[in-house]
Image (cartoon, rainbow, N blue to C red; front, side, top):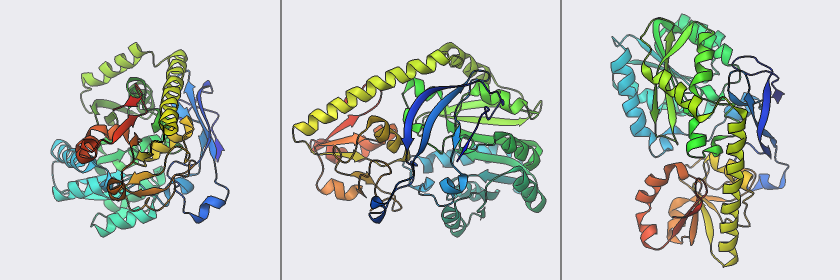
Length: 409
């Protein structure tokens, strides 16, 4: 693990700690039963605020080889992503490609869900993803994927072999990269002169509006808002010319960037920067107030669950997302409260959650003999879950919301 002493965007040394979540296990490092008896690696999870550019970030960086070479997250298994990516593909192809010969490159392309949709629309598509197990799945589905980390050197190789990219895409990947200067240099080498870099990431504003603090884990090194991003791109002769907000995995910001002066900068950029300013995201005090409110949420949720358990109620977790492990760790909720966590992804079933060591079972098993209460770890998919589990709701199973205004739904 390395520890940064400077902001990864503006290189300032004025970094102030505002949220300490302690020493935690890696959010995606689910454990086999045999591994439960062995020491579990844990790393500091602390969020710092850059008092110069305003970026919130982790400074303790776990080696990417540890985090990403063998990965358990598959885009295709997420409930709303297939439709979201289908529309995304249509926008990218119709909005920015003039011919089928032009290239689309996605970094952190996972199992090729988005690129498959882009290929189906007739475009050339290439994926780059360091997770060897997932790149193999993508290649098997017909999406050429290089099992590598993206870098400036990698960008030069790709441009030489495949040509420059008219569109470069990065979904939930920019926040994972420690060397953002290398990323931008790579984008400069890979993109065609009029190329567009489209990237989507959790929008930091969501943490203040919807208390999405559980998106904090070791893979997410940066918590992105538009003002710091604008500053970053300008350092490399590029500019963000549009931003759209999508209600996917919480609220995500989709940013569109290109070489400076190539495209008209839309009003969305300035409007969102102004919103961030009005919310006080430029101030450390705003971040400290967020943590105070999170402490209140934690107290209310733990009190509710403890009371239910004391009354003999059976409680389980609905979902076992990576972010759920941040919530369990921060709230101090373990196997003494939760009997199990549900999942549909085969890569997690039969394992135990990192840190809390809660067994993961298939959601179909849980439906056969449901608990009295489900703690909604996948709370950001609340509406989709209620629609999907209508039978459980009718049978009297209750759901506990752990964020916002905690309580029974």
